[in-house]
Length: 149
Length: 149
DNA sequence: CAGAAAGTGTGATAATATAACATAGCACGT
DNA sequence: ACGTGCTATGTTATATTATCACACTTTCTG
Ligand SMILES: [Zn+2]
Ligand SMILES: [Zn+2]
Ligand SMILES: [Zn+2]
Ligand SMILES: [Zn+2]
View 1 (cartoon, rainbow over the protein chains, first blue to last red):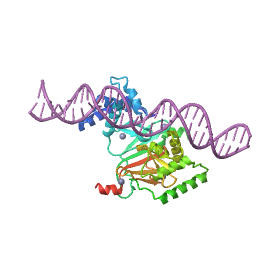
View 2 (view 1 turned 90 degrees about the vertical axis):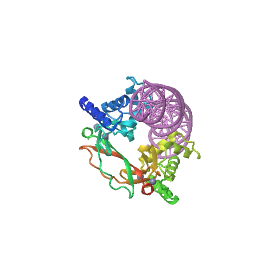
View 3 (view 1 turned 135 degrees about the horizontal axis):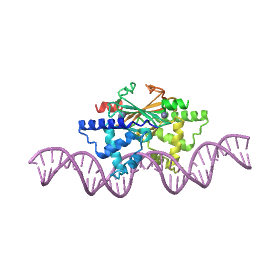
View 4 (view 1 turned 30 degrees about the vertical axis):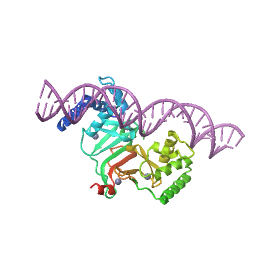
């Protein structure tokens, strides 16, 4: 399973998210904040409909658009990432570091490591202007690689 | 639009696919072959349900599983790739060159360039064993970049 | 030929995501 | 405070993408 953040680092990540939004005049509303909490507390990538379930207990009986809107906001703010090949989402532990993100996803335990600010892929076709890159690596994390060796 | 292959290069790619399958004892059945043709003839990534439409004219009134099975086969054979961030598929112009694939997808005209042969193993986390990588770059191809400059 | 394995057909359904429109809350100039 | 517009949310319905389960056929193999 993904290494769950300690309660401490979870709340400090949330605090940083709050500050980031305040600084930019973005609104980290209750729904958005709750979705971010669910993402950060999870022990791996989370499916949109699981977030939906996660919101049920609270006051807002959320419907799909609610969750997808919150995810759109969080991704635009750089506070969450989509794992394209899994149709799942993760909270960004780095709270919106700049630059592209590179993900290492363990197929065995579900842990995800993020690397921000990856170097440009260098040999793009001549004249090509890259706006955004999706880079996801699948395999076994160091712990799982040792066990299955 | 994606640079459509000339009829010539399309049939030579198909011929190479046939040979590859023959060599490995894989069965490029009519359905599979037809799906590959549709992919190669398309001028960009193709959605599964568009392939379904494309199969309608023929004898097999295909249902979704038919198409997804054919795609699974083609991808395992290295004859097609999935564009994860678009939920779409492309025929491999290189007919199963080995190694990972890196895609350059023009958001303006839909053209796709493939690069085979692992680009850069990069600096994976220590101990990490990568099985498969998804690398997709979105932006503007050289032609479209010039126009929108 | 029998039996097994691989491929396909078919109907149903699951899982993921968006459209369209109504309502509510907040910002901002007056 | 008031009206006005903008942003966010609620709600219903639907679109899009993908798989399951089971029957049937074809192909391979002994
Ligand atoms: Zn991140
Ligand atoms: Zn692991
Ligand atoms: Zn290829
Ligand atoms: Zn282009």
